[in-house]
Image (cartoon, rainbow over all chains, first blue to last red; front, side):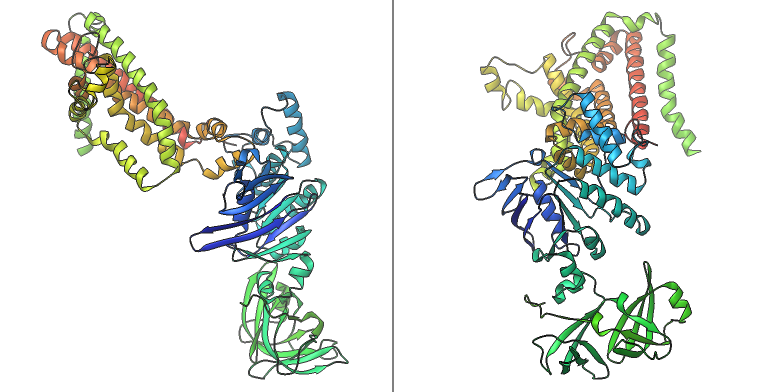
Length: 369
Length: 258
């Protein structure tokens, strides 16, 4: 098994995490920067020695504060990839990958054939003699991964592996890396603050906030339909409204809610325990909001809100349009074509269309805010 | 204009030394007078011994200072740089007070049959004392330029801190170390004040080239000029090394580049 827990205090910050990384799967540590994700990885690698804890790598105990056990990083058999990859500038690509193979082990011929094998797996043929500073971001990342795999690690620790790549490249590289990771049986622990990345790569996810693991489980359940407001904020649900329940429609399975100024009414799925007068938090992703220039008619969507455009800001792959609708501000994510076609600019009038079923009601945060 | 005057100010004495040395009676045999040869031999021997000691002791010290900063180490850092600003004569007197026959450690040293002052070992002591900071300072900066993250990665790849130093840190920081080495060798070779105080001026034992020049000026100016010329050439050689090293640093470690 590769699992453990750690408690560590650095100044004001307190880390109190636990994790497990089953073989043959990708476990994502998800949370905003500064939450303690990287520190958790470094704890596993032995680069941080926590005040208290127990760390197991591939079935071996490498740290146990209670029994005073400590295995230094070079005997832990972990493949660690920091954000900027940390390639050795004075070595060629071959040299970098070969660096990961223990010298004491096989003879040079065997080592080199292993290097060639890994270089091929990661599609680095033809770049063998190049230096890291002459490679593209994606090639650099694959070299670093090749080097880590060459050391035959019991666990692969990837810290924001795509952060240093530009937006276009990120999705392509991610697809490639996912294939490599899936084809190996080495458990992978991957740190990211990007919800899309977590969804694309994770078999399981641990959500870390402010040094603590606040939820663990299926990435889709936790990130796409976050049950807690705290997680919804982390996973980038752009619209979160605090509303009051006005009435329940048991037949339709919906309830009508209103904001504090009572200028907006929203139909949302009924929460089982909600009663009129209760305060609830309702979330909807910006990509699920449709915009229209004129009042739409004949739609199945239950919520049509008229508003004025507050701002239009680029966010890949399109634009975030925020709309002031009475007492609430709704963010919709639309393409450039739509921005032009609807003449969306600050002050313009537009209608927001929200399907009731795209809205969801969040549980009250068990840990408070 | 100011530059031209300054260049003349520096260049003229050097040129004068070369011209006078070459035109002196008996050149080039003035380069190989017994006094010059014996001083040269001693200078090479002691300066090389000093540099070896400086590298062996200075490297771990520089590495520690580059990687850790505590209040104690900051004080150590200052102490190490002291010889850079201390007049060498004062260094010599201080070493006498510490290791001399009446010095703080004189008694204990004598008890085990060691008497340091006025020996060749004392020359090395004096040279190490004044020259080590040049190497340690350069090596510290060199080590600081190596990202600790790279060292961490090397360790996660199965290399002990020791192997990591040899296979990663050293190859990445060698230009700085080589530069420091050249500077400290030049400083050891030219050492005068501390040596004459602590080691004296004895032929074959402690009379290094700078001391021999002083002695020869009274009796055989041609020999003094010959020695001066040799030291001048050695200094020029160090400058060339520093130039090469600076270029290596500018281009990154050897062989790096597309």
